[in-house]
Amino acid sequence: MAATRQKLIDGALAAIRTHGIAGVSARTVAAAAGVNQALVFYHFGSVDALLAEACRSATAARVMAYRERFAEVRSLRELLDLGRALHEQERAEGNVAVLAQLLAGAQTDQRLAESTAAALRMWTAEIETVLRRVLRDSPVAPVADPAGLASAVSAAFVGLELFEGVDPTGARDAFDALERLAVLMEVVEDLGPMARRALRGRLRARG
Image (cartoon, rainbow, N blue to C red):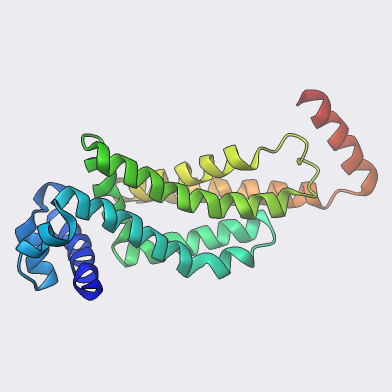
């Protein structure tokens, strides 16, 4: 039974890649999964429920696949490098296209909106853990908001993933801008003890 459920989940993701969210139905999912379409309703009750579960479980699997690499990140530069690698791999595997379709469908489907938001929070939680670690001893720690920054980073990467589909040059320029920001942070991290204390004081005063 678990194997059939997984086939249906994989079939739903394949159907999204092939037909787009508007073309997903019990028939297209069953065809992609190689099973009888009645099994969609037997295991999930509805196509919407299947899509919601596919969104959650697929994201959980992707996050788990990158967890060890997130745990190895020790700087914002390394986080950016990992983000680039993740972006390239996810696009090559068609997962960016799936995300775009799920986000489109979520605009009018509350159940899908909830599952898509939950999926994005999984990525955000991983990024927040990294940011708390790498910013803990940084001069900018007094004004850093790891939770808010993690949400901003997640939103930025989702936007860049979708943006690249219509304007690859603009997306590359945005990644390059983030690269320069990482260089700036490295300069801040390399400040001497007195400069670091002065910067911390100024930031606290403005915080």
